[in-house]
Image (tube, rainbow, N blue to C red; front, side, top):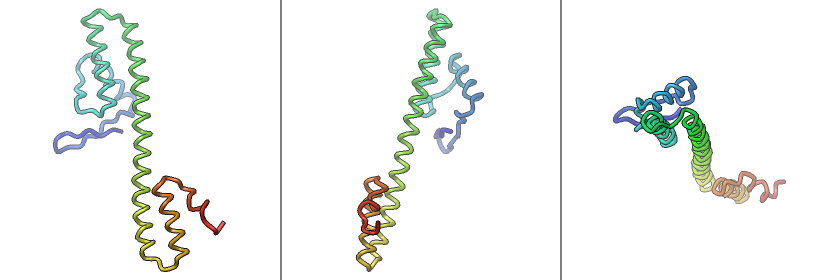
Amino acid sequence: MSRVNYPDVIVRIPFDDPQFFAECEDMAIDGALDYDKYPPEEYKYFSGLAKLGYMNRHKGWSKEICEQKQRELRQDYDADRDRREFFGNISRQMQENIRRGQELKWQINAEHDPLKKLALALECIGCMTGDEGFAGRNSDEK
């Protein structure tokens, strides 16, 4: 589900609901959908549909051509959403690694045993580099 920011209001738009999405597609094709505040991927897709509807109504594009173009737009949209999800997951993992690395720094500063400090430092390096197995590969406790 995507979030759209309107002044003083955050609206959740259920793009994952197939019925709602189909209604939005129909409205976009008819030129009746206000997609200005939609997230980039949805904006691009619905804007393209609105242009297809215009070309069909005013420039004489056949239904078959418009349906083919709509399939192409949908493939691009699906790829854009997959890319957004992929990079969103990477971003969340990086944020978690930063948070975990900071916790480990506090533990390192509080620790007095040099071997425990080293183990925490190895784990911290693993978080900073995104290498979850770093501490295990560099530990003498194998």
